[in-house]
Structure formats: structure tokens, C-alpha cells
Amino acid sequence: MSLSVIVRNIFLVGVLLISCLAAHAQNGSSGMRLNRDALIKKLTEADSSLVFKQDTDISLLPNFVATDANGSRAQLIGKPDELAIVKWTYVFTADEKVNLAELQKLAWFANTLGDQEGLDWFFAQLAELGKDYKKPLSEIKMFDSKSKGEISYSPKEKVLTMTFTPW
Image (cartoon, rainbow, N blue to C red; front, top):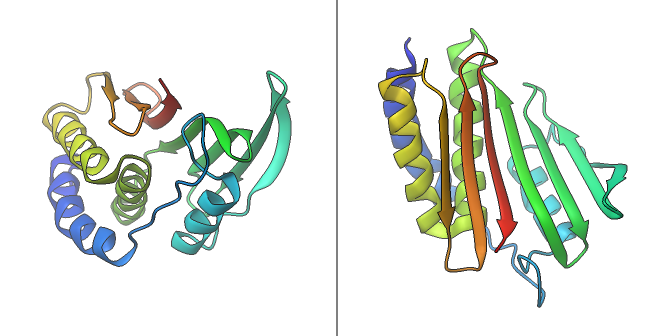
């Protein structure tokens, strides 16, 4: 199954997934207004293989990291109610079923952090990736919720990364 077929499948399955797993993790007054504990709870409800552990602080900010059973990595950097960076990284594998499942998680992640606008943005970038998966991708989007999203893909490493930061 090619990456373009995965892109089509993710759209169909993503709609179902999003309707079942809608989440609102916003709570707080500054930064991205995301409560770390609420976001961790939503992420682990969506994927029980994620176990967050505090890692080495970055720029004096708490750093929580989890890796799922398929190698996706979620990272939350910042104070409990003032996250500075929320990041999801996935390395594509030869297993198309795993890739599809991980892309579904990325769609959920985009929806959780960017609402419908984030989901639409993710699917648009996924469609671009599906056109030529040998070409690097880097796209930045400013969201109404005062956050900035960035999707990047490195064809050499086959790494897809989605990062949200305040703006």
C-alpha cells in the first residue's frame, strides 16, 4: 500500500476517530492555555501505550516525554498551565497498518491542539506529502487560539513531526 493510499484511508478513518475522541484540553490563562495534566490524560486515553515520564528539563522548563508502542514520541515542555512546546514525532515504518494507526493519532493530536482548523491543516499537509513523499515538507500555521503549529517531514529519515507553540 502506497503513502497516497494511506492518505486517502486516513481521511476516512480520521473523521470517525475525531468524532469519537474529541477533546478540549485548554484550561489556564497564558502560554498556549493548555493544562499539561489534562492534555496527558487525553493523550493517554487516546493511546494507552503512552506513559509520560518527566525527562531532563529544557531551558528550566519541565519536560514530559512518552513513546508509544509504535515508536511515536509525544513531548510536553512547560509549566503545568503554560506549555511552551507540544510535539509529536513519528518515524514511518514498512508496516502500512502501523503507519495508518499513527497518522490517525496525529490527526487526533492536530484536532486536540488546533480544533477543526488544526485538523483541516493536518489533512492538507498530509495530502501534499501524499503527492511526493520523497520531498521534504515544512509548513507553519497560526491558529486563532494563539498557538502556532508546524508540520515537517524529512524524507531521508522518514520522520513526520507536528509541533505547537504559543505565538
